[in-house]
Length: 527
Ligand code: XMP
Image 1 (cartoon, rainbow, N blue to C red):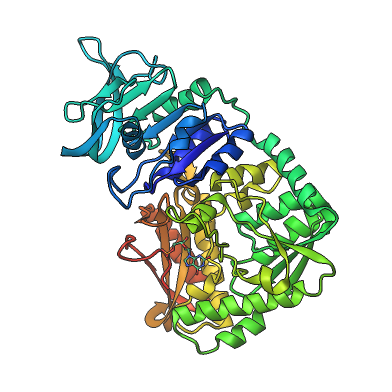
Image 2 (image 1 turned 60 degrees about the vertical axis):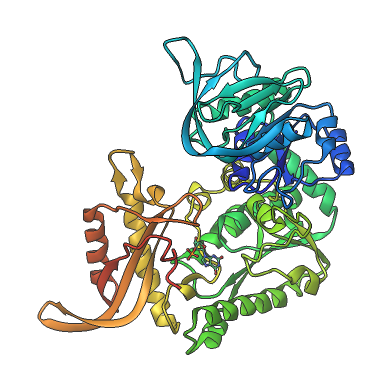
């Protein structure tokens, strides 16, 4: 395994992604690990360490320091950006504030012959120098090599852009191999973890399923497990995996708050209960939720009510299940890293996404989180390996409060029914419209798409009559991280078809508009 130590760069998670893409298992931990922790990792097959970048300077007082023991484990170390600078300082080199801040694309000349770069280049100069197209982001740089290190790469403004000590297998690069803008980045990281550290490419899904199943069996024994199934990807995959491991010892509770997508409850029940034979308690709590939401218009108040009611309903059902000892959650790796916090690394809080945070204590249950080590796309691959339908596994994300935050202002069942129909038409057309350039459907070309109900009436004309009905807004965005997003450039024909279908097929709607706001300043959801 590879250990990645995080010093607070924005892109540390990408290092883990790349290492896993090389087929090697890795873990990401805050940079200030203890000597005891390193010893434990060593005992568990540690083969190499990667030090991430940071937003701080290596000579900054507040910067998280690289523990000296990192260099004493007898395993190769790769320092990236800040990681390289910290390595240089540790071994007596010099780091100073650069005259030229480098940010973005750069061409780096590979120097000498190193195992890390051997045979890896983007082009060569007429003089025969191997060149690499990379992405740089730094204000500091190494200005004197430490003893025992040789120059591995340079740019005109950053003479020491890479360094290597090939006896101890310590490498440093000033640029970021983990981002895709560094064209050979994956090749370099693969070279480091596989050839230099000697890891085998044995991180693959079918093996992982067997491993995970064995681990769950060992953890759970003959106890009973409860899981809140939402229909979303994470809880669905967790349910399928745990069911494979312990079968009937798993009971899922599926709370329908009446704010789900069209036919969602039926799909969940048919996939899990009918096809897979999972025990699922289906609670139709629509009336409870609608009652509690009656007349409430403030978005945060609505979120709180839905969250609180969810916990109550879930708790009521869960307490009926005899001898349950475990509460399973679909927590995934990004949730773990996010809540651990790059700096403190102490408090690992639990995902509150499915509104069951705090439940393990009240119910006196132990937490079972079988997806904790996986990234989203790995969760999807696992879902496929477990036989879940592609449509479910590659579904757009859906917020916990559901249509509750897509019906602006006060929520009622009629508005929810109209919105559900309009949304289903939109999604249906997105799935059915193939983009000729990419040969993909517009559903797959968008990250999230949905309809929003606006409680505003406008005048229309239908046949010979005047209408006075509500408005639906369509929202479709493209994003890689949901922190920023662009509105999707949907083809006019598609928009036109969706609009006419909604107005003709959904009774209470006579006008459809398309949302052309980016995030920021708008958010993806309207509330
Ligand atoms: P925003 O609207 O903040 O959405 O740009 C970013 C992503 O988060 C989802 N979202 C939520 N998910 N509970 C959730 O589980 C919520 O209250 C919630 N609010 C927003 C949203 O759907 C988008 O994917």
